[in-house]
Each structure stands twice: as C-alpha cells, then as structure tokens.
Length: 71
Image (cartoon, rainbow, N blue to C red; front, side, top):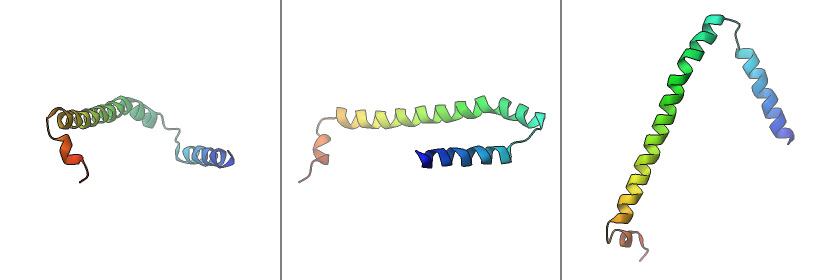
C-alpha cells in the first residue's frame, strides 16, 4: 500500500515538473489526442483480430491439431 502511494506521489510530482502554463500547448495536445487514441485502439483491434483469425484457422482445418500433440 505504501509503495503504491509513493509511486503515485512521484508520478504526480513528475507531471507537475513537466507541465506548462502555455495555452497553445494544451490546445495542441487536446487536438492531437483523439487521433492518437484512435490509432492505438485501431491497432489493438486489428492485432487481436489477426490473432483470433490465425487461431480459428488452425482449429478449423482437419488434422492440424495433431501437429501440436507431443510424441
């Protein structure tokens, strides 16, 4: 519990050190955030889709499951 509180305090202090009062910086961050989040979520969704597609393909073909059995 104390380690978690210490980590949160350190993160808070670092955020305060790197923060700025510049309005243009906040405007830029606010305008760029939706695109960045969309790219991250889209990439995660695509990656998960590819993984499940490969797993379904391996499981759907007859005889492929035998390759994974130990001899």
